[in-house]
Length: 239
Image (cartoon, rainbow, N blue to C red; front, side, top):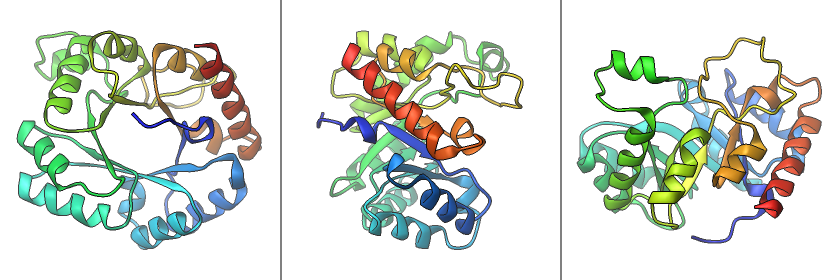
């Protein structure tokens, strides 16, 4: 796996209603954030790809988190279009054939990440969905299958990263959402169930941390981002 600059390890989730709001946040954050996630909410708004191109033109890294899931040929076609825009990370969600199609279609420096289990799910949710296993086993199984399919890494809660590091190849890229700094207000509405602090996630072996609300909802988003960057750097140095 290529070396990762500490400042690139923080991925800010641009989960806002429209491209104008996204650009305003990017301008406000300035050099505090170099990597941005643009997901489904923005994908449903006008100007999605213009926003992606704008971010790339400003030297930012871009994570398109749309969890591609369709017949393999359609997923492959979508991946090729995203790679043509020099997207850094692209998420896919599906069976072996879907992941293989995505991996085969990628080009340039774009990397394919497979979704394991959403951080909004807990064991009760998996039981309700009919999975006859615990979350940790499911995540490890999906990660191994993703690497076999040619994917570059996975999206995984910090709670499962240590197990991935113990059993999956070192080349695996682990991108961890559900990051909540200690200072985050636990009373605030939140749909994440399996969460972890930046320090704990890095110590467990996460490569990249996806952070949204703790920065976006802060009184000073730039200061919040810089504080998380500092915590990440200290955690990387300590591991």
